[in-house]
Length: 184
Image 1 (cartoon, rainbow, N blue to C red):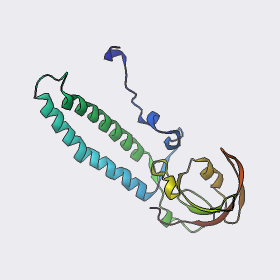
Image 2 (image 1 turned 90 degrees about the vertical axis):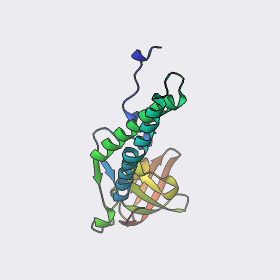
Image 3 (image 1 turned 180 degrees about the vertical axis):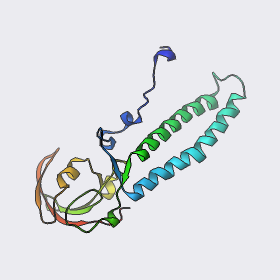
Image 4 (image 1 turned 90 degrees about the horizontal axis):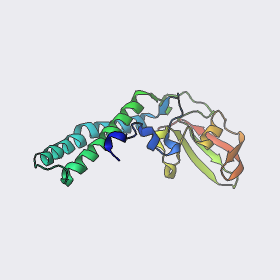
């Protein structure tokens, strides 16, 4: 098919897994550490990686025939990827609403940026931190505020027993502890 009739998808949000997509018309809640990570990645792309790739593409273009020049073809593709990521990060940072858990007044109710210790239905304790969609790290217990379990926990209080309707069925969960501390 002719390139003139194909169009690359301009919305990088479409390439994200569903758990990392923001619901339409919502704020991008994020912790200070998550915001800094996005900002650092953007800086690295703009000031380090992109200039290096531009230099390689310019060198490759000066070598002549571009149609069979692997450095040129790969470099142009990498530039498109970098530019797309830069647009994505810029949009995410523009709509970011930074919520510092350490600045929050002490409460026993679960809100964004809370670290919650729960007792699962099978009797095991689990520590979960409710973070932004760009900060998910399930291995460390960092779950997105839009995840089903986080939505179930939001506004619950210490001592509450709540019903979590998960993909594996219903489960009773007890909120043992709610703290607001640095998430990292």
